[in-house]
Length: 353
Image (cartoon, rainbow, N blue to C red; front, side):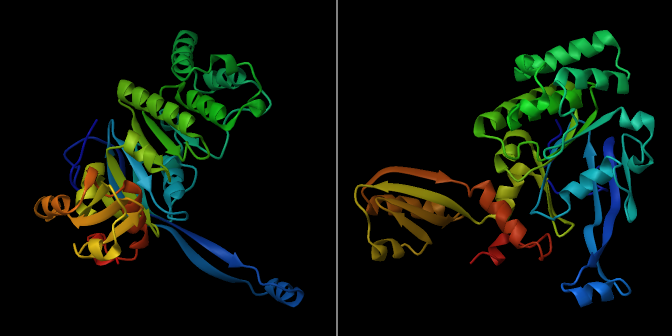
């Protein structure tokens, strides 16, 4: 799997084969406002007011073979719109994109046979039929020969442990069971590119872990290129090495998962377990932000100073245990969302209180 330690743009990867290449991609929508009241509604029949919504703004990036890329962003950031463009469901307002050498919205048959799209809130399985029937339909749609179909189906079904569910109507399955079978259906034709739109939404911890293990195995085994949108940082930590943060339709950050911690945090979190609850005066004397939770104290200490000041803190306290950790990924990404109006090169230190 490709691992990039620097921010990537469309020009960064010209020397390597890119399965996905996007330049200046944008999507605008005209939204009509409907005023309240009878008179306003009648007036609206003759004079409608509208506004332009930029769902995606001039996005450029490349994705290489075998990459597992996470698209992060708040609701309405343009993540799902981006996947719909790359899969050819909608056409852009401007810009270009090539996926597997094809322009997605031209919907060439060869292109449609080589990618798959799974949307966590939409079903591709027939609601009233057993999943086994939908699988056979996919076999005919993608013209998969019988030996290959049976081999691939059995492998995927056994990996997810869903064989007892194949003859059960889809409407009777739980959300987690349904999502597992949705993934099987999407992978039956062995796509080279997989688009996943919030596949773990609403799932419990056990179901999330099962999907993480399954996707990691299949992606590594097939060297499949995967683009994932999610709100769960556990998905990102378990699956992705590259993160693209989108806010207000723009790319705010594009780089490795490891680099996002080093680049956008200036401190580490030090947790002290003490014998007794300390006073605020005692902790304030160290000059760092802190939080007292009974006998436990959480300090935020500058990364550059931690080796110098931590020994003094430990000597001055009755410490039973200590831990030093990076800022949680959820907190870093939340700050990136909140600083979305700033240039991509702005450091989070400038927006933190």
